[in-house]
Length: 274
Image (cartoon, rainbow, N blue to C red; front, side, top):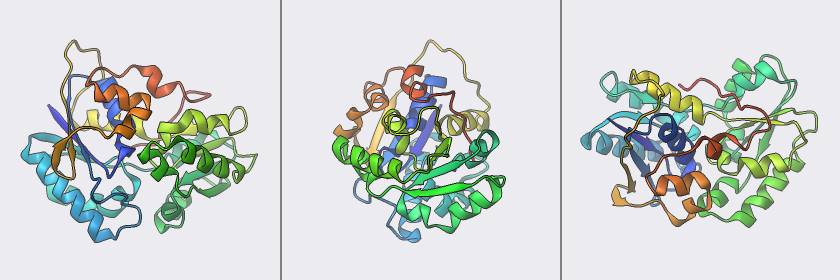
């Protein structure tokens, strides 16, 4: 069984890692779009066109589910994708874990790209799910781009800047961009002791398995991992090797749980995938 994950860059690594950990027998098809990245500043029609092109190619290659591990792409085109591909092919999107953070926190900060921070989408999410908790909106200019390029110095500067603007009374930080979990450990190091990070990668992976009527269990087999770069066969970019989950996926081997969960000070919770 094959699952396709579609994103402009390395934001898909965390969800792919969870799928590989929970169901290593699945074949994964990773679609990255270096020719069109980053998607954040692009128009809605551009993002929609790139998603549909990748999704059609994924189905042609045998994908039985399509995962969109990108907040921007989810809010832009998830409904259109579902209308076109479901019910035969489930389409699973991603939303920041505001609801889960609100259930266990006194104060919340949402770290996201500048565009997402200013979006009506994030404001609706906070209004619907923050449960009256105070929410600080923390834009992180340049962080996703630095992560995509494997530029650790630029990522450190962006993280330090965002941490300096995060109120000290926020005991939870929601990672509102799927790139950010790749540097979760460094983010925690720059936040007050006891801060909990929340992201959606595990929830998206588990929702994918539910939609496929599969369970997370131990298997002796290991599926393939294929990479397409803007529609052409390739391999994960060199920058992916800057992150443990990227290195594990590049070998097409199993992904051990410490790579995925050891960065959080407490067991991270995740919002339901959509």
